[in-house]
Amino acid sequence: MQSDSKTIFEAALKLPENERLILVSRLLESMPEEPAGLSLDDPELLNELRRRSADTQGAVPWSQVRAEL
Image (cartoon, rainbow, N blue to C red; front, top):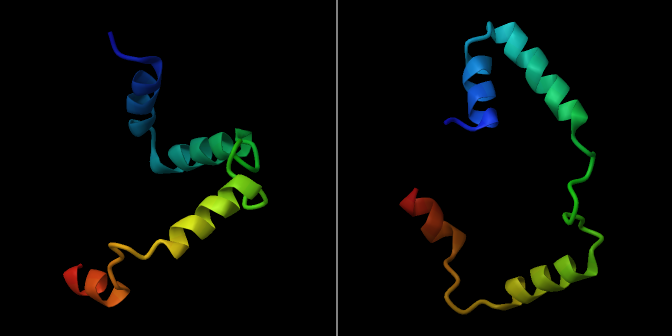
């Protein structure tokens, strides 16, 4: 048996484009402005970002990453 969200998604894909856009807009409006647990004011997140930016071991330069794309 398919999950409700998959059934709804498949039905939504059958809607005309303008109706899908309206549906997307209404769904986005129903979401909280800031997802729970994701705040740049969170001291734990800031500490983790600082820790990761200071850890350069194994870091790959952007020029190399870009060249591989």
